Image (cartoon, rainbow, N blue to C red; front, side, top):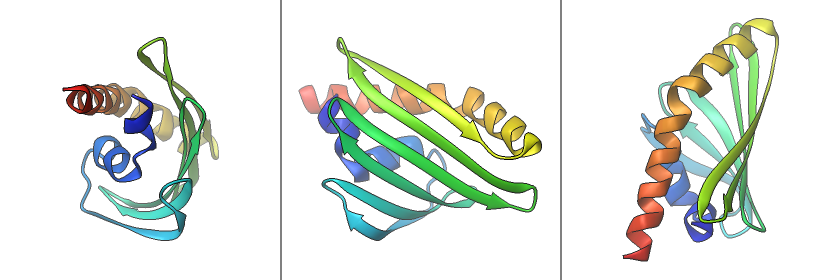
Length: 120
């Protein structure tokens, strides 16, 4: 599971549910890198490999304001755990919370499926 979380290409393809394209902006995909992502919207994603998993920071700018989703994805006892913080103005936070509640279960499922494939 940890190798799956720390493989930036695999992680991006698993968590960006409507991925159209992505490119590295800066950094090293083996440690920490920032990517420009085009999904249903355009945003920046910074991935930082850490012991036990990866930290991710999504930053999206919209007319309603900037939304930042900071997550700690960890493999704990053979399971995937995500701790998330949502930052932005009140409206951006409401939209961010609704998006997380709707999409993150699918993201987690896809990451677990990818980790299972790598074990096979």
